[in-house]
Image 1: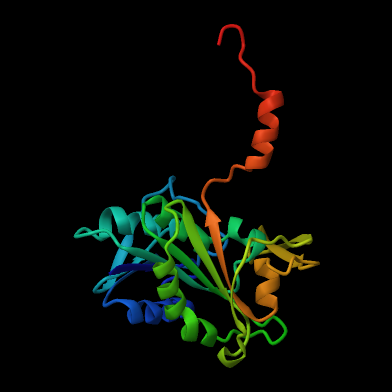
Image 2: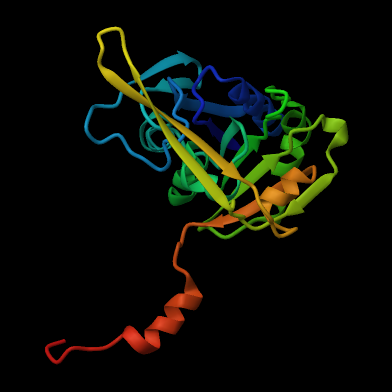
Length: 258
């Protein structure tokens, strides 16, 4: 099995090293194609207004000056030339990707791009202990390979990607695995902090905080908070079917010249 490993935290990120170990437990044909610098929050963006460049760092290991989506595109269409990957693994992200995070996350986007390329894809993220300001990679290191094996055994539709999140606990404290749905936090507090550089020119930082609020017990947010590993199938088709069906009877019509 050929595995493509990528992320959004960059080629030198600790989590990428964790994911390489996970991939190494599954196959001896592992390719790493990751951004040369951190791309957190890049979402499913492409680099279209400047050329893409990449550097070969070692055998089957490349750094791309671009987004996570760029990395998957470059890997599947150019860098890996003697056969497509059988699996895309993205992560392990430093911090969870839960609820509405999936709309911003470069980690999720890389798995989306792998799915669009027809390759089964899994995004993996490790929650951070916010109070202690530290991250323990042990849950991802301990359970990552077995979860990927179980997911591959189960299988999933071609238009679906898998989002796996590990709780911010020691591996021995993880309670289990739950298949969940995507949750949504209640409140978002957005603050833009203005600063000035050494030449007096302004620049800005986003400061974003979100309240968890009340969550259904089977949501990804609640499950990870309760100490379980969350596995969430995400669908590429964003159509809300119930609303589409309701509106079809009232808004759909043909004009005379149609």
